[in-house]
Length: 240
Image 1 (cartoon, rainbow, N blue to C red):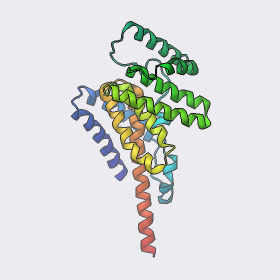
Image 2 (cartoon, rainbow, N blue to C red):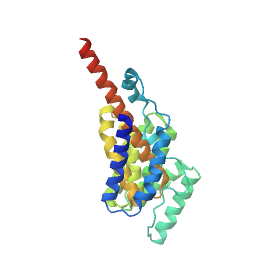
Image 3 (cartoon, rainbow, N blue to C red):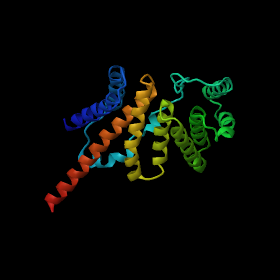
Image 4 (cartoon, one colour):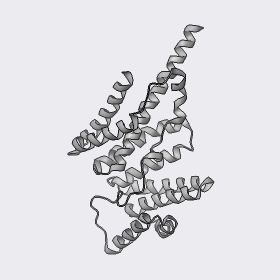
């Protein structure tokens, strides 16, 4: 019962934050999709024995693991105006991404890393991330941190681009995996905030809604871990 109350609290809190920023129609459409996403992730969750609860932190799924998958056009902005040359370049980049030509895409975008165009920068961040995953090992880590630098630049340029917030959340979660559990917990709140902002800017992006559902699942499971830890400590004190 306590876990359900906490789950409802986290869900209502996220939706309230969206509503307070005066985004129309988000509560209706997003609420249903968000509830569906979270219930799908949490449908099989059982209340674990106290000792097992304390051990679940290592098993918690990450936004980066479940929050995005390659789908055509999912990250294209709702409405963006480009100069003709920029538009042709963006279309070529999206075609390469859809065709999974990640290395070619990365090499095409890299010379434009100094651009002031947030649309190019977030695509470069995505390409660097995906290319690093293909390379694996230490190269993966290097490219993820490289991607994070690009997405921060994109956010500085335009904080109203939903794809920038979406990929900022994904990359922040990825680098958190290299920085330890304490930092990852701290960053989880920032990840949630950027996912909420992305949904405000584009309420129809299914993968962002799903990612926020995963994030809500993480908060719920982390609460269960804390409950289990406190229960063990209380029992130890009584036994002593």
